[in-house]
Length: 168
Figure 1 (tube, rainbow, N blue to C red):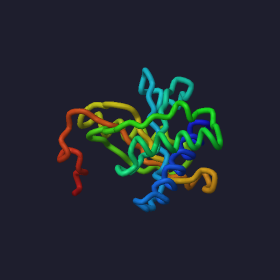
Figure 2: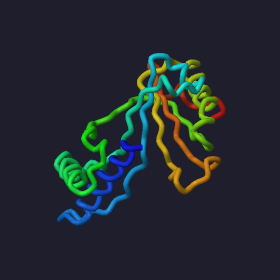
Figure 3: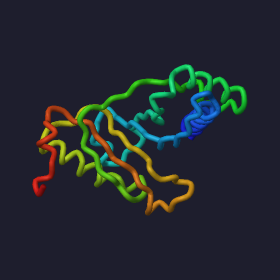
Figure 4: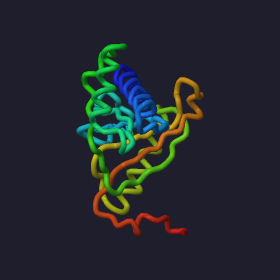
């Protein structure tokens, strides 16, 4: 919760800094994303959250550079002092080829969806990288049955052509 608060505080501060700057660009803050991993990836299907490790992130537009992010962090530190803000960092992120699907429903029911993504990948290739989720719903406002989450998993060694459904 503290990490999410810090991410959104800095992301919105950066947004308004850019909007009020000579650039005067207004943009939407992107959704929260999470990278999840464990020493044994089968813990995702089993739902054993005690063994999961994570990184939360919010994508920044290309025109929001390090200087803006560092200034936003300093401003948030001065005004709100959220405990996790000192752990924030700006990084480039690229996953490469992935399989993904939209999951609708509570996080606690993602296991079968994740299993289907893993089975899809194993039929063509193998897992690579960290389990990735993109949270499209505001969980404070939407009912859990309506939460929308993109479940994404990087994969190795398959060509883009081999990933097309066979009925296309």
